[in-house]
Length: 548
Image 1 (cartoon, rainbow, N blue to C red):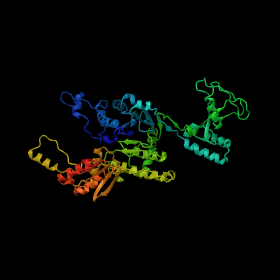
Image 2: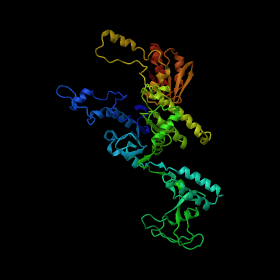
Image 3: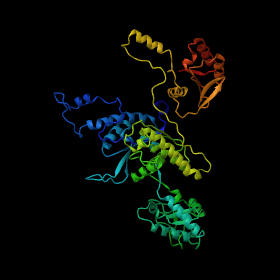
Image 4: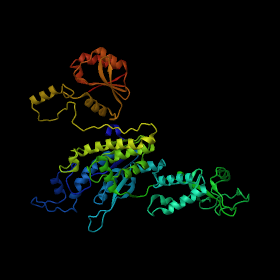
């Protein structure tokens, strides 16, 4: 991903495996051997025997940190200048994770720690841990500040208020005084913990919607003072002690627009109507309250059985996405798990009309043989990931179809598996015998492995050329040749090693004047004259030739 997506990812969210002291499925060669590590840290005595195995020693954390560090280094490269990374973590490793993030992203780029109150655990004998952490770092905090970028989330409980207001206005026949009284009574009926009740000061209704009468005086004092006449009595109203909030011409416009609420007489200071629809967004709090058990229930319902333990909550991720991403941004999750991030991206797109894209990466980690996932036919975690994305997309289309008003919602995706190259590899070995070296040169005459599918070859070629895996690809016929057209003809590729093209066919291909023409070297069948003529044709048409 480094070549094409360098500096293009707006937001990264990961939920890495928490360090329980167990072995990781992520077996990389980044770490020193355990013997070397024990010797360096003095955990082997003079006889070479292990002297300690304490969890308080660094060895307990080193495997997890060695797994995380290189991934975070690569992740930083992918972020846009105004991008950010969010990492879910528990109490055990947050201190160590913060240290390596300070090194990778820079301590000055720490945005903060979000505490996710996800529900009470009952297996503790001392303190029942009911929260997790989401550590957040910006790619460059200074870029955010210099460009005036702020993160905002939509306040909770608003939709219920709007539904109630619409109901009260309809039932009152458009009498705003009556509907306002009904709204106040409705607020009182709500439980104290209800999200809508936090906005109970928005209790008045007019033709524009629900509002509250806010202060109309100049912040801090020293505002302008001038005469404002009461619309009924015609007498000057009381001027606030700190002066008016607006200059006279602006105030007159607000009065004309019915944004100023006057008292019964001129003795009361007027107020300014602040509408709920104009103040829907706020800077997010550092504590999220969302019961994590609900996410498990929703996923179980979606998949038909409990195929994944402790999935992250798509609503929490949707909140993070909404405050950091916009319409065409790209999101990455390289510990995709059950596919929660992709689900959240699709749901947010459906709700706000965005076209965000998501890249999910998940190792084919085997499911437990006795697990519900294995019983349901999922042999690996990545199979669960793909199926969850399929089902979530279908469900979103079903639920949102009425709101889309005929517009198409893109919930499709391409799935790729990491495999060995289909092209011939050069074996570097100084100990090769003469016969082995001769055999190596003989085998290298073939540029691609026998039986390699043209589609698989094309995928590798596009990655090497720096294209994304989501480019528009079409199969077209050109003078009898089956050719791939990539990015609306920007690249043309002929990757069939079985059929040798004629010079006239190649000329027809070059005549389309793609920016780059890719030909599989095996397709020439050793005909150097044909290859030389093609080179000259490409030069004449200013086409960049690339042989694979």
